Length: 172
Image (tube, rainbow, N blue to C red):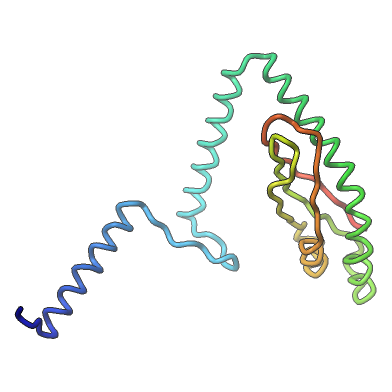
């Protein structure tokens, strides 16, 4: 078997790398955007287009549902919101004690803040996902970080379908 010279190895590596690059471009791969940098205008336009397409698809799906089915979905969402709001009120006490009070003791400003919990429940009522956002104008990063570490295993009456809610917690 003949030996390959250094230049032939380099050419072979270039062909393999070119093939990988072609594969990535062909699958429309885009690099992830770091959390610290705002998305570029190109990414914002793409994100907006995807969000609009999802909204249009959801609207078309809702239009296709019978009015009785739409009413049943709305009832399930209202009931889920009521159940989750009750659980969130109990959770607020924990956030105030463990996160808010220590933060205010070290720095009194801002005197209030808002956390928005984005919570998803499974059809059987178990919490399956959550995220926390804070109002940037009244931000207390230490409180938001602390609140994110606290356990929050909410369970609601089974809604029969996945339900995603945004629940607001105003502190104190």
